[in-house]
Image (cartoon, rainbow, N blue to C red):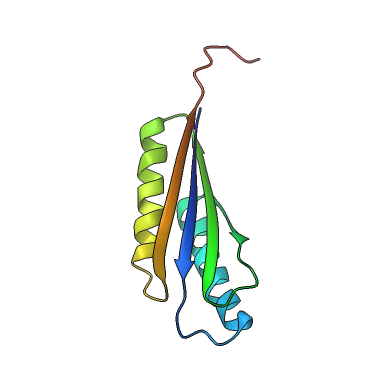
Length: 102
């Protein structure tokens, strides 16, 4: 089993209310969830109008698939156009258990 985690800092410009920010972030999170079957949430900076922190997780039995999904999620966000993607933290956890489960 391989688990991939992303922490993505998003910068929003020209947003004058938290309501406007939430609308953009909620839309991006929902689109990521539906298109990539990933667990996605806003995980920090909820009280900031200029910054959002998005967390995403992907689980698979293939490490290559996890890498590809994480790359695709980042590219999707970078091409959104409503915000700027800043710092990205990426972690991969691999488990090599050779057990048979019943």
